[in-house]
Image (cartoon, rainbow, N blue to C red; front, side, top):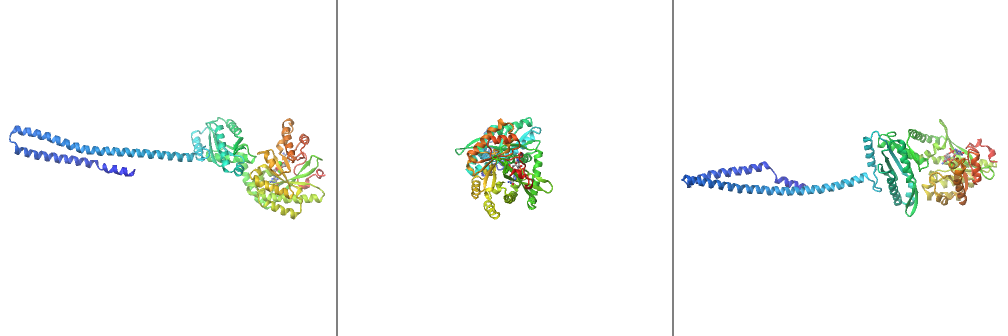
Length: 534
Ligand code: C2E
Ligand code: CA
Ligand code: CA
């Protein structure tokens, strides 16, 4: 291309010089012709008329000669010009071609930057641009920024492989596209995280309805690798202009809300609020103070009796941790357990509870009380390779009877690492410990897990028992759960028994054990009413 331009440049080197050259030749030739031909005429003709005639001939000859001269010069220039035009044409074609390639390249780069490879929905960059444009152009309108995440995706990815994980991401993207409607936008941030932008809704209420509708439609069974896989989503919502004034602020708020949705048990939508932000700030403080809490041994264990249906006596207790904070007083576990999970302090805390429970059981045994103690485990400790060996050492050292202890695990703890957890639970049972599945019925419940897991007890979550006053409504579900547990040869512990009505119904439904405020709150050992055991 550059060579072509150089060639063109040479041919049209200097138009002014060329023109002066031609004019000079013409002037020199013309003047010379006039002078010489006049001299010759003077020599050859003395006759005036003949002289006139020759002058005319000479003039005609001059015109013919100059005409030829102009013809050649112009022709040469015109040829050159035509060449140049041809060259220019070629150059233009080449330019056009390379322009098309450039455009193609530009499109490839655009697609790469603005569309997600896997799902073909918008990329992070495009979402950023869209949000920024929207805010610039629609200062007074609402925009919902929804951060969406597929529940338990990590587990699917690990058990089924990344290819299957990718298929689920693609299917969810298709579903999201279908349900959000044409006016709204969907993009993928990374992994299983999507962003949906909902525009053109007049009120916050309308936005909420729209988001609820999306959530309802997305929860479904997807067909992956010749198997059905039920997927639910968690979402965090931030609304412009209330929660943030640009992409980054909105993303931050939506992310806080999404985290909260996960912590609340997944499969739900949480809207960002100032209160939530305060809570988060408070959490950061707690995380910091946990370090000193562990160091200064500020933790205690409370026990809540678990009553047998046979004789309405407490044959078990659940060990529940308490934090005796130097400034805040007694901090409930729900305020710090999941933070301790994140910071890793949960391991030390669990070991503390186990040791306390071991000591307590030996103490009761020495008092002639035969009481089993149920201990809550955490995902972190359950997945730790040193857990079982360390526990075995402790059992030997303290000389406790393993059959007197139950370890409580939740589905969400198991799901993240199913195969490994099953192995650990089997080892625990082999040493003689019992296993209970805690909080059954909330969040991600899959009945197939019930069959796979090595279990002894099923603890029905208190949310099922809370609504018991309306007997008609809740009893078929409870009946089903209790019957199922019995078919699987599991004992049923009903949590959160607060009323006589609830107790009566659960008795009728043949729940094996009851736990709840109706009998006793969790208390320190010395405050427990001994009558409940005897
Ligand atoms: P959880 O394992 O489901 O424990 C039962 C919770 O329900 C206890 O709350 C208990 O006080 C409460 N509860 C018992 N009966 C009733 C009732 O009749 N009505 C109502 N409304 N609530 C009742 P707590 O002690 O605040 O513990 C909350 C959660 O914190 C526990 O739920 C458990 O998930 C966790 N947690 C407690 N201690 C430990 C621990 O040592 N280790 C671990 N990993 N988690 C713990
Ligand atoms: Ca529990
Ligand atoms: Ca529970």
